[in-house]
Amino acid sequence: MPFRQGYSVATGRILLVHESAGTRALLADLLTREGLDVEAVDSTYACIDRFVDAPADVVVVGLADVDEAELDLIPALKREERPPRVLVTFPGPRREMAVRALSKGADGYVLEPFYRDEVVGLVRSQLPRDAGPYYALSHLAREVAHAVNNPLQIVALMLMKEKVTKQELLKAIPEQTARIEAVVRHLREFGAVPASKPVPHDVRPLVEAAGIELEPGEAVTALVDPVTFPAALMALREAVLARTKERGLRGQLAADAKAVTLRVPVAPEAFAGEDVSALLDSVFVVSESRDVLPGLARARVLLESQHGTLTFADGDLHATLRP
Image 1 (tube, rainbow, N blue to C red):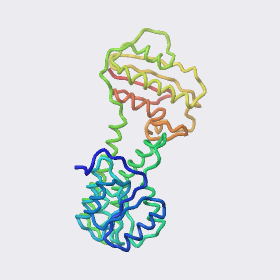
Image 2 (tube, rainbow, N blue to C red; image 1 turned 90 degrees about the vertical axis):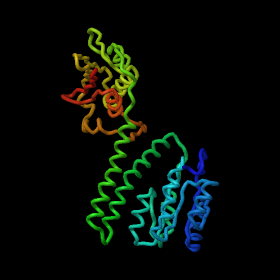
Image 3 (cartoon, helix red, strand yellow; image 1 turned 120 degrees about the horizontal axis):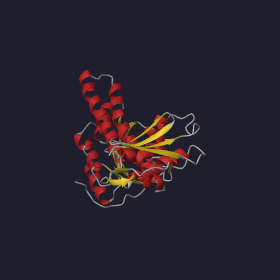
Image 4 (spheres, helix red, strand yellow; image 1 turned 45 degrees about the horizontal axis):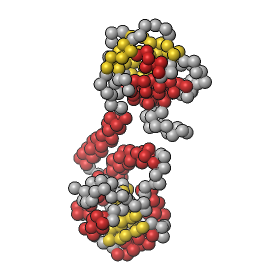
């Protein structure tokens, strides 16, 4: 259970725990000179006690050995409602300690003896940034990078050990690969917009509301999501217009018993020099305007949320729904 609920983490507060008085004093002095609010304690129990009273942004844990009492501090802190970043230090070259700490959820490590700039730089890299308009996106990117890099770092450290057995690798590599796969699976689930209950709808007004002109013809009724479908068409239109000055797009609507397809011819210069398949697949792309899920990826996510597809073939973009 979390030690405390509903607190607000103070930017720049560091909690330092190290059993060596000399190293503890050195680290506290280095970080204090950087203008950080540092509190130092000499045991994991004291660390937990102080964290309850005054939560920190970063907790620096000095490990003397692979001791479970010390290592269990890491997951305990990570179970907090707003968990701190946890960095560990330990005497080199005990890489098995790094593996154990990272497996417990540590965000980084430093070998002792350490360089001043090394410690200060690592601690500062873990501090929360000022909340700007893109803070949520940058925070998400950092967390995703950490969730992927952590298991990769564990495997890399094991491979660097002087003596590593085949059994250790056969156990560690599948475990860490599964962690990465879980992150990717979560991102896919997170990125898909949940579809509301499909209802019979005349597709033509939705297409026209998205600003795409269609050839005259009879109205077509399909089972579509009345919320996400027009949003997907608007995203499709914006993606194409962003890459061409041609504004007179004329789509064609086709329907049969199994599918409804909107075909949008694309000017040849619209995607000149670009891999359209990559544009369809790229989700986390930061453009100059800092758009999230920009262009084709956004339209594809919206369409796939209701079992549709977005493909590019023979110079046309095809947005297809299957009732």
